Figure 1: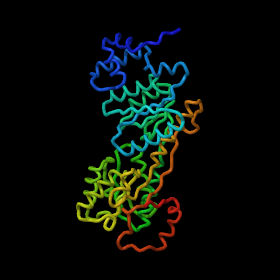
Figure 2: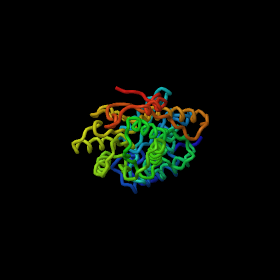
Figure 3: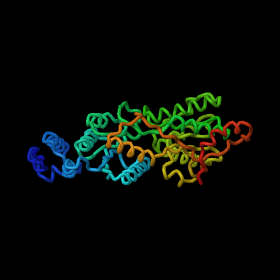
Figure 4: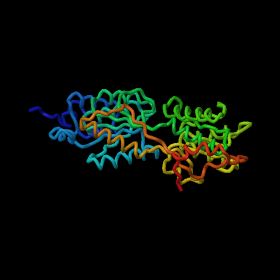
Length: 358
């Protein structure tokens, strides 16, 4: 019978105390990076896994799903995690949540811990620079599902949304209201979802016979302060926009703040439309019209896919794109000087995809 290495064995091999070994393996603070790496190397060399995982060797499964997320500060991540947690509970799994950081070694440590037998499968919301995490996950041989692949090149199954169609839907709505000078607050440079929303913006304009004007595009990095700065720049144009489409809700909040600071009103003077439909979007004033990503469903769908993979069922499609939905609230209105005419009738097809929220 093979002898299962203990935490004491790991501590002895690494030359540290039992408590230090425990803190290093569990990712707790108070351990120097060099010491943490030495403990993890000793753990891997001995083939050590946590007691919970060792017990799982008897039955073959632990009924635990690991989930790696960049942080828990954003409502976007919170909604995805909530959906994943509820689905995991319904399927009889516990969800083990790890946050990474901007530190590359820390991200790698988290991925190594989870792929070292602490869970039956892994869900991952990728950080901005995902190479280290993806590398560890791809080499693990474990069932892995990526939530919002961010354009990363990977053969791992992914759950994402149709960002392009969502952006097209947003522009169609603003054009239907008579807007032709439509600004765009771009997200992070080079990130796939940001590029797809920009593509939807451009082709939405083209479809409406509106020429693309690069001066109306400002980078807001998905952040509220940058949304404020980018909107201020748009308002200083000789011919400012009558509507602004933001690549996410948070930068739309910055846009509304900048508009109000100029003494202008939303939506009477300028309409604002976001993307995500995080909970705060219905609570600000005016309530934000936005493109809803099914964040809760993304987390739940990822868990359902991962559970089926753990059961031995291989996914049919490598990437699953969920549909978006336009949520009408109070931040968009008819462009001043525009009257409804036959052009609105041509948008009836788009209206069928729109859900009105109060």
